[in-house]
Length: 321
Image 1 (cartoon, rainbow, N blue to C red):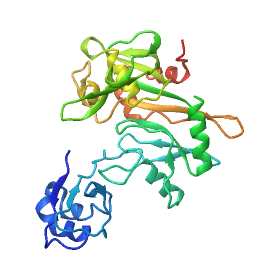
Image 2: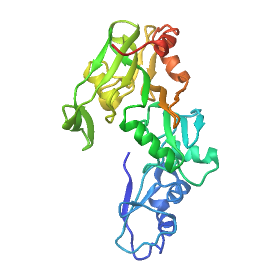
Image 3: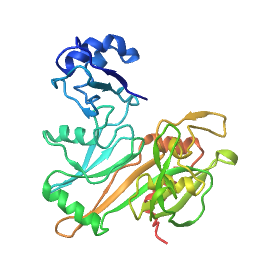
Image 4: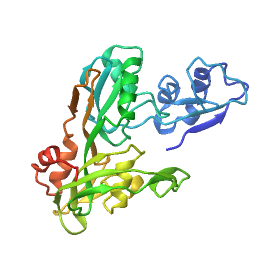
């Protein structure tokens, strides 16, 4: 979706809030007048390319852009704080939320965590998950924690485990190591891609846990461990291996799947979940935190004919080869 954009006119008012209130009726559309007028308070209004506050002054000729609010799936699970020690915190991100505030609104994992903690300061996300992906996110609630996590990342001491459901049949275990760079996508966006511009080394350990379905509807439950941390790495590597993750539209994943009974299941998220993260604390003790697999992924696997015990195998398996 794109932003509504216009130039501030001489009679539009002295502040962002004034302009939005005056212009709301003509540009609100399906969002509604109240939604457009409150866009600045929600972090969706940008003045000359920078996020604007309601009281920011405007002048004729300034460009104001308002992005539509992100629509979240009804009944989406809440953010949870799974563990906390010192200035380190591990939270569970629902698929629908961004990790950090973005142009379509300020609600995000870190803003929700700050609210849960009753803190005016946002935690620093030391790891990030894409919108559409759920699971564990490491955060630092202070400078000491931020420095510690940065040092652990630099030393390669942070380990993550993901589970995902991919289209097609994948067998065995191994390492995907195709370099990842940027490639121009339709619509002018640059997306991570194997062999794209500025490609850097990337490595993902994978293990096929179980398959479900048959024919064109076959799917594989994968356990994935990123060795490096390139953007979209697991998604890009899975697609390059001929097994795009279900729901991953950016990298060739299906928008819907058809079960053996002929039932069509629309996919509202990417079938990828960060199930575990482990990191040494400041005393050297390894802390491992697990985020349970969301029900919607378990239900998808079951609808494809998958055995529910495969999830336990994925969590217990070793992806190294």
